Length: 518
View (tube, one colour):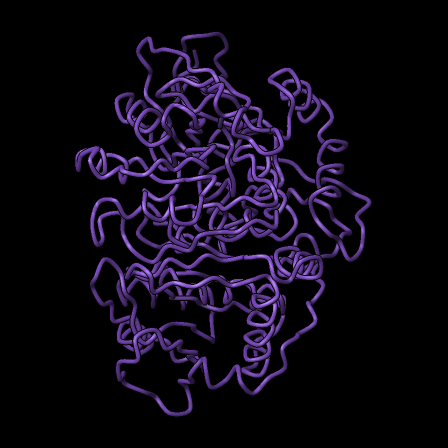
């Protein structure tokens, strides 16, 4: 599972781990919060005075073209929440321009290609140029503000460029995981109404070649409304070509200037769609809006992962999932640090690949799913032959992490010096909602710890529908307050959104996950 949709089961009695002393000793500047008491104070404010709290955070972390007056309107009951209503901003400006203006030579993207030593780095100045040129291309292809663009790209820097080129012109990116079938891609292109698709000739992963263009061609046989396919040359292999529809990325970008002025959009304008599998078989296009989602990404990047300016953040998630959206692309770039884009697998060319990348690039935060950790633990500790001395935060995402894997992660990977953050969230929440804060929260294996700012959890009895209070209780996890990064709707199906998340227990946000409070 790509995002944190499963709550930990009822834990057995386990040890509590405090933040390692070595974490503080190796920290270059100190954490953003002083201690757990400061978290509690800010958390209380976020629940009691959410308007004041979120207004301050939005102005601290985001750059608005036009300030907002109304922090929040709407309710969970009505499913009409809106944040920073009168504000206007641009996601690409917040992720690229404001950092490029200060330090254009700072590394934005560390690309680890499938084959070791074939990667490269991209500075913020270079990223601004690349994003601008692709924005020009999309504009010339007829993409307008509010249009959707389908992205079917592997884990290469051009995926990040495509995200930001869409947001730069006010278009909505709809990313489809580049391992999905042509049928899955077709369904998502049709549902989103995308007229432009961005892909590669081929992809590479784990030493294998993926026929991305071939899959796109097959999908588009049933998508007559698609007018343009922008193809990035990844391998150089000859691929079938539809004249008048298919164009080469490298040829098109050469036609346009190095700067495209960012389009100012409303805070509540859609930023992206991301499809999740629906219980009815029809995929759900979860829609996130601009300011609220960006704030959730920036806030959790700052406080959960303790991101500072000179950090190098490595999230092992794919951009085809919410983990990659939020913690490969948006959170690191909003905060102006360097993000690793990892094209390969943890086992290619051998089981030391992750650890080689962390050592080579002096990675400071590492975020990955327990699935990968279990694989690497089974492979044996002899593959962990680096000190990885810069690691401060070890994150986990996607499912509960078993106690023995948690301890292995802490002892063998983190050398008992890094803080483990086992995070719970979902595609629909946009960013972490129950999580430790890096360098602050005591943790224990099997627990996602404490709610993030603005998240007021409750446990609901699934039989009575009533809220259960107290310790050592189990039920359905729900949230009692809206928060900025929550999804606003299901694309073209708001009733489905209401029935899935907000009408199950009126006045609560619910996505049916079992939960235990201790």
